[in-house]
Image (cartoon, rainbow, N blue to C red):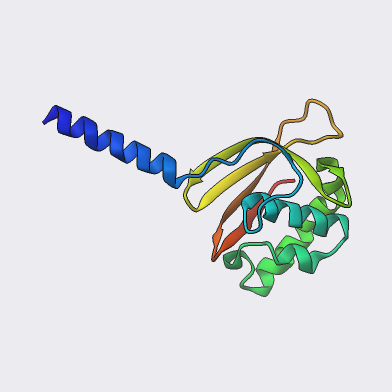
Length: 143
């Protein structure tokens, strides 16, 4: 009985690991289309280009359903992000950025922690994303 429980636990642990792809920390230059890294790069590019509509395109669909959700994002998150996005990019035209840490919360939820390249010693800042169809959508952007 104990051996059977051990094998079941081991198989469950392996399946969780395999279903949660590991995203590498480090510089992100040309991320794979549809990846969380690509979503963040699109968001950074939108902020640098002062393009709220492009940013809204990478926000998770459940978080832009009502006019009040959109207006709230524009007034609070977007205002801050648009001003601070350049803190996170090495090369503005390419929106190359540095991931300090990745937390795979589940197979459909991930947090990427980005490094502020301007303010030395500042804690990495998270972007929380969830699967949204075939790609990833931003749920909360703390950049």
